[in-house]
Length: 275
Ligand code: ADP
Image (cartoon, rainbow, N blue to C red; front, side, top):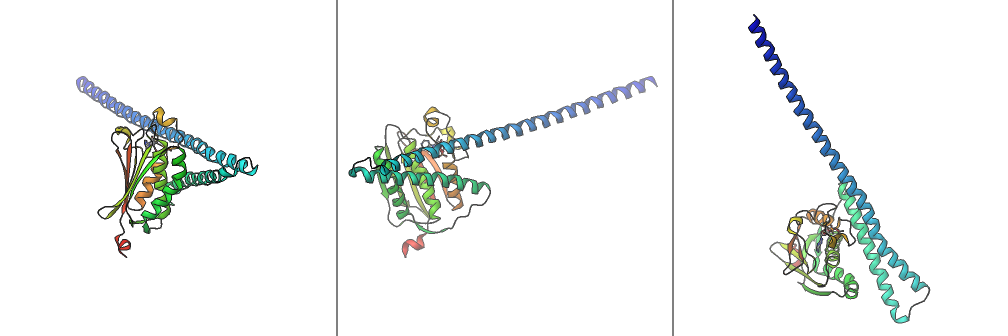
């Protein structure tokens, strides 16, 4: 009948509308998904490009300092009394170059899943003193005061190169992100089943909302205090990955009244400490 036919058409019409609506929603979801993926790719691509530029920029300063000092020495233009200071700068800046390159190499190895650490009992007391020594000249010439509280014979299950790299990155940042109050403090002690290192500065500090992300790849605080300083945003991400690969962890807290406290915890190796 006419009525049944009318009902059938209305029903078809409604179903058609529903299907159209569903298709619309599906298309919407697909487009949004695609858009987000493209945006993410673009962001990552931009971060990578920026990273390459930043690393190249970071390498330039030590390289030009090495060159300048070597040339000056070569031409014999400086008094005998300052020769050792020039040698020291060349040594320090070479160490800096090595550390920057190690960060990049570690970073890329970890991205490719090719990072292998050799865990063994390491005397962190000795290792820490050695790294601090390599900073002495830089600390002195930049006017820093350093206080140390380093317990003797602190041993951990660690990879010595990875440990040095972490401490280097933390100290380098502590110096880099200090402003007028140039005071650093380094503590190393035995905790419960752990070896604990603290690198404390009285510098610009880290806003709370950034604390959870500063250990991520390529993250730098967006404020001028940070962006004005050289950096490529991988030092802390490498440090965290290395710490985790050694079964440890790294965290950050506020220092009071200002600055940051970076805390590295590694598994203690008490066996070795006793023997
Ligand atoms: P980079 O120093 O090359 O930018 P890092 O991965 O070492 O990269 O550090 C990431 C970010 O964390 C820095 O850009 C800075 O914003 C913040 N940061 C790290 N260490 C400190 C510190 N000691 N004091 C204040 N901010 C810090």
